[in-house]
Picture 1 (cartoon, helix red, strand yellow):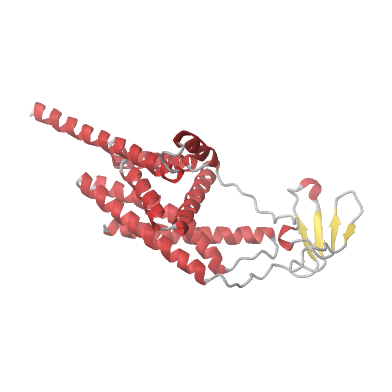
Picture 2 (cartoon, rainbow, N blue to C red):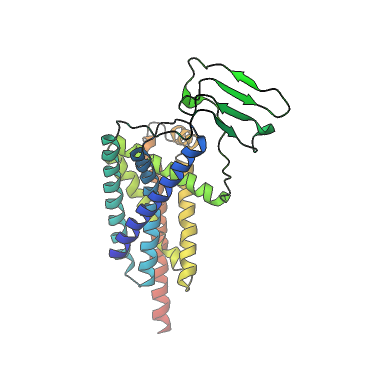
Amino acid sequence: MLFFSLGFAILLLVMTGARFLALRLDWIRTISDLPGTGRADFVNAARWALSVALYGGILLGIARAVLDRVFAPAAVLCVALLSLGFVAGAGSALERLSGAGRAAERSAPLGARGLILANPIRPYGTAIVLLQGPDEPARSRVVAVPGSPMVFQEEFAGTDRALVNLPPAVFNDDTPWFLRSVAADLRMSAENLRYLLARGWPGFLLYAGSLIFLLTSLMFVFRISVWPLAGFFLGALAFRGVLALETLLNSPEMRDVFASFLGDRLPVSLAVPFVFIIAGLLAHLYSTMAYIARRHAGNAVA
């Protein structure tokens, strides 16, 4: 219990900080007066990190239970209850924090009048000079295209400042595709949990509980190898598969499939938890049968 609690808390705090820095870097790359306070960015970062802490906490908890040879049913029950309680508590706290910080500050834009935005990555190396600075990107500016005369553009009347097309700063994104896909799936998982929590506790607890039930049922994967580190990596791959499955099942296309298949027999909102529960039951059944088979083989040898 102590190991899982510490692991969940550390993952939530560390990943919240990392995501917060990433959000601030994205804001800096736009070099524009986009709305966004430190509080709002922190809440958004913590919501994303909540899914990381959920998957990562269960992964670490099960791996530790397998390493210490904890009785499997007790370990699964402990990890599942702690996960559900932590996710529900952290999600509720984030919703309260978000509601309390709606009022707004605005972040100060970078630069001043005459700011030159140039990015050689863009076609033809176009540069834009903001005569009124990033505070007023829709005001008068000068556009310089290599090989062509400079063009003066008057004020963009009625244009939303956030929609003005400004070139981003030169920051290359060299993140591997695998990590980008994991981050995108975690973001979708976090948004789904947030949506369910906003609609009420019953739906949130049902979905989160069924997801946790499926994740904890994968304890047998950690026991496939006698080498603990190999078992940990196999478990991590299995959890990545569950994350991808969650993204797939919550896609609009799959929801349409569920709606056409179920009709009026079962609400579409219950389809994904039902799939998680069935898959978890099959995994638990496999673990039980494998345990009985091993005990039977051991008694026969004895």
